[in-house]
Length: 61
Image (cartoon, rainbow, N blue to C red; front, side):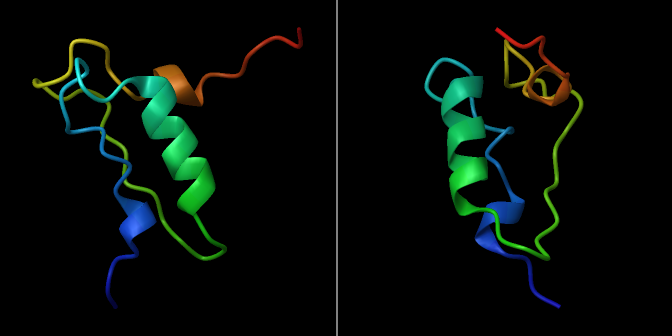
């Protein structure tokens, strides 16, 4: 079984050029029913780790 492009959110890319907000927006835009997202809990190339930061629940505004 092949991986869908949306399965790789880009969390291995540098934070300086790929913010968490950009990566989350792209993941939410591209993911389809049945896709599996692979997210790292810490990648050395990111100063601002993607997960679990974008996976934490937020309080309603």
